[in-house]
Image (cartoon, rainbow, N blue to C red):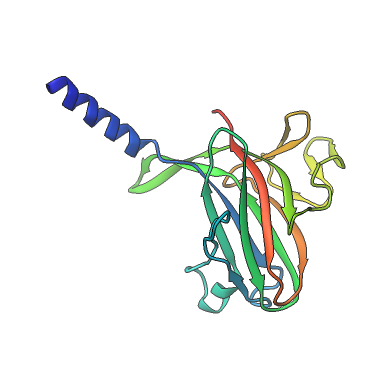
Length: 191
């Protein structure tokens, strides 16, 4: 009986300690406060987005983000938003992090690599979504994308990695009142 209870306690503790890793998709206007963005809440086949609740109050309606738990197998993750004004926004695809401990009373985090491919907007691949137009002369550069310093191409240059601090981003033009659905295939890479 004691062994059974000990096994249950150990399994419950491991479940709490092994927190899931999430990817994040974030959309912000290129000019602070210039474009109000309405997030689409969770619906069938779609992860919900929400407005930021931190930062200057007048800028909160202008940034939306969504999170989704990611596994070690590729899966398609979808998010949606609607701009209230026309203009340009920056779309960020952000990798994972996991709590690794505490220092000086604050949580510390380990960055986790997430692989991304097949980035689409409203069902159409974004320009250079296949990452074919790139150079790697000291630092990886992919036409149409801004990359964090630790991003890299993997899987025969068909997938791109990112962490929470080393992100992938690109600019996209948006029209007022049109819904935009972001879709990306992602998986968590082994440590």
